[in-house]
Image (tube, rainbow, N blue to C red; front, side):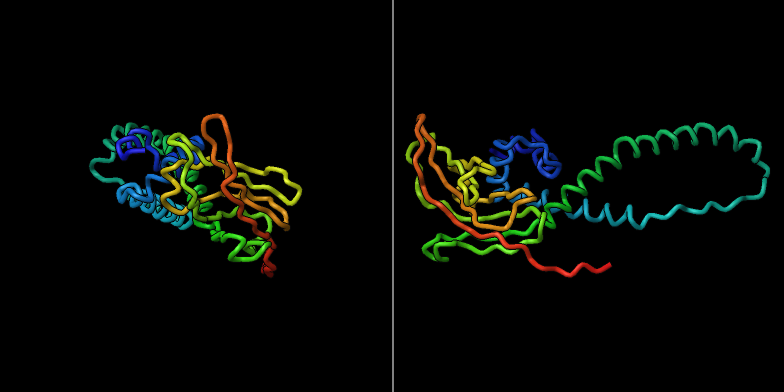
Length: 228
């Protein structure tokens, strides 16, 4: 993805809202790691969403002092009616468009900020069980790792399957050749159980699939004391 494509697609905004298709999201993630403008805009968007969330939380209803009638009191209804109508339109627009849109961005930004990240190492480095990941129960998290095996063909696409101990595929992500130039990010959805898992990496090209490698890891829930 080129920068002009990202601007045309409004990729930063749609990425924060989760509105990009998986393929486009992967291309944009590969792009913003190398694009200073998109990287800055994404960080600024998250900072704006965080500030907006704080603003709405701290917002108070202003108190309007009553004024005594003056010489031009008869003129005020003539001015107040169109002003009040404009105010109703503005409030309605905020409630129907602006504020829900900001809240949606806030929610996406909060999820991005709160999601923990863990590196995955090869089993030869971490042992047969691979990396040990301790995460809060019911919480989504992200894994990052390197794919060092070069693609077999110019049109090769890497498939990364997350499998449980029974061999069931829980989720899959597609990784382009451009994306393996940096650390690959794999998003694990919320709701996984404790146990042993692995990421199976495949090179898919020309109608055939070849195994590239496996990255085993173990998930354990962290014990946290809930305070009320």
